[in-house]
Image 1 (cartoon, one colour):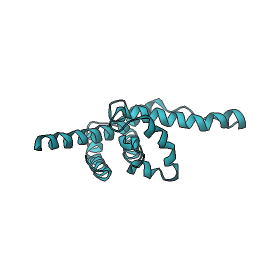
Image 2 (cartoon, rainbow, N blue to C red):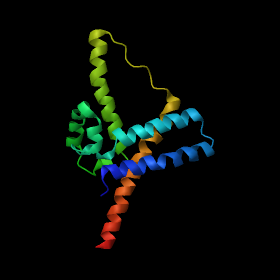
Image 3 (cartoon, helix red, strand yellow):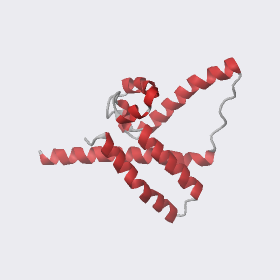
Image 4 (cartoon, one colour):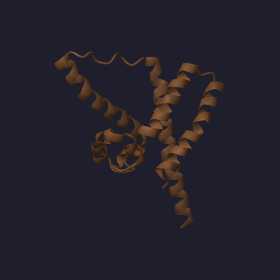
Length: 151
């Protein structure tokens, strides 16, 4: 399979083409910016390889990489995390971690909860999270297919 560096280079190299295609299709600049930020963030920090405890994406979390250890323990490599549900599992996992931080602060210290996520940002965020995932999984499958054919 391709290394994490190959996946990241491939994902980031295709980003300008996606942005250009969106611009040519008439997608507004705000949505393209949200998409681009989500895409880069997902490529760097929400890779399907977070199901490996010692992956490049988990290392990028620096001192917070321990937060992904339960995720790596829950999902076997190239299992559900590499399926169409993979990005959703990572987003829900992040939401659960966030609630573990914000709910006690809210109820014990009166800290206000983060405001509602703007609904118009949801589609570009989801596309920005899903597209690098699909490229990652597609590249894995392409390399696996080539290896099988060369045997």
